[in-house]
Length: 65
Image 1 (spheres, rainbow, N blue to C red):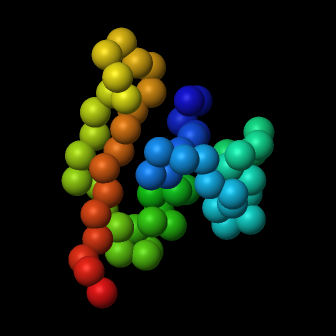
Image 2 (cartoon, helix red, strand yellow):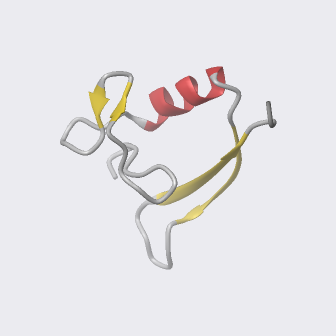
């Protein structure tokens, strides 16, 4: 929604780098993906969240540590 992260693993999360995700101030996609990449995550898939959706579902993975 407006290039913002709404959910992680199907649930709204409490904070991302000190930014409330459950409230109005949600992190933008590029900031979220940059932080996730630093933690070893990479995007392996992308699709509409559902038919006719105006938002997308990203699938990320990282090696097991």
